[in-house]
Length: 221
Length: 261
Image (cartoon, rainbow over all chains, first blue to last red; front, side, top):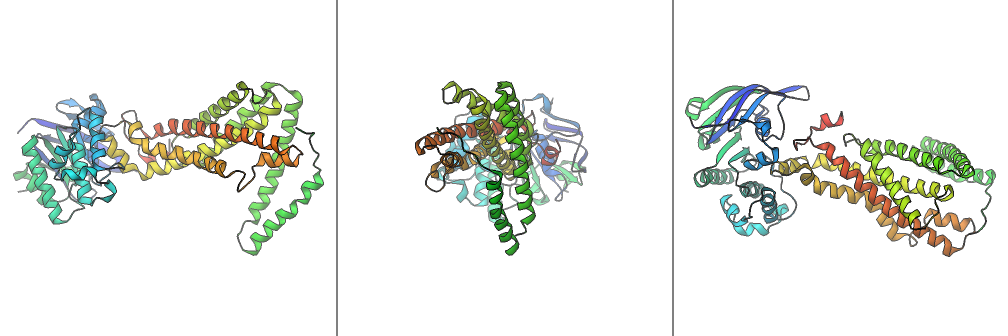
């Protein structure tokens, strides 16, 4: 098994009186991990915890061997970049979004390279975000995350709003990113087939509990 | 400025005919506002009469201590009233209280320092009342908008936090829009003043027999003072209140949790 990236021990979280995550324990190695399970299982909540956009009520999470709360949350989020399910770009152009993210991370903006990596033509830099399709917005979100040069990408259902053609294209982009940048990916998906295509490690969640975790071929045999 | 005029109770009572007209319109067109019109009339009579006597006492005593006590009470009750309009903003009372206090103190302090008004009860009480009242409306509108926008823009704000932005950076567009909506009403009404409506002070002075030039000059002084106070109030309220939406770890608080804070 490659080095462990995220280590979760007895992580629980309740919202509105409902236990969304219930004593979740799992390891996620470097490489590509898919968190799979039905809708409402707690997958997206778990992903937000990995980026410290929320904290668990109980339990501990470690990233690269260190407890998550010992990291500066802002620095952590630049190293571990979360791309949310619903595209949520800032008003303006794709280029201004990418430049803003670069500025936050103290990186030199290179929109052209990031747009290409995310599968968008560089001319998209001038496009107003309000005029993009959902698939293009998703790619713009990916480009915005990539400009920060993260070590890990957390992707929340990156293709759920897309048709099959756009989905295949995003999946090809993600596979290309892994090869090109040697970036680790934690991907939330309700589709086990997508996990099969993209991941080599799988954590399966149902009703807030881990029901299986391990190499792809064992969990999704 | 001229001698003050005398208004009899009979004259006030006569205008109740117009209140009756308003109630009749409501009844005729089934607007269901008769009860509210009745309450509004009664409350305005009682509240204004009471504050009239309080102001009379303060004018007669002519000590700044009583003036400050009255203005402080206005700030306090203004913040409570404004909080009712900012229900979606967690812990809105303190930002509002500070906003009204700062807006009142700084604008009154400035007009006194510039020699526009004397630091006496006769000037500070009415001008302070207008300043705090307008500051209250502006900060309430601003925080109302802030609460709505923070709820509507939750996904975008959290996506910005996920880039490593601070709460301040992530909320900046939202705070800007809230500030703008707090200020825009007075800015717009200042633009149209004299064209579409005559503001209250000017009307009051003209009725009291002042020369139109004096009435206009005083009205301009008050409008510009109010612009300043409204800007300060909306700025302070939004700048302090947006912080309550975020945890120290730059996380967006859960709205249910925020509402019960």
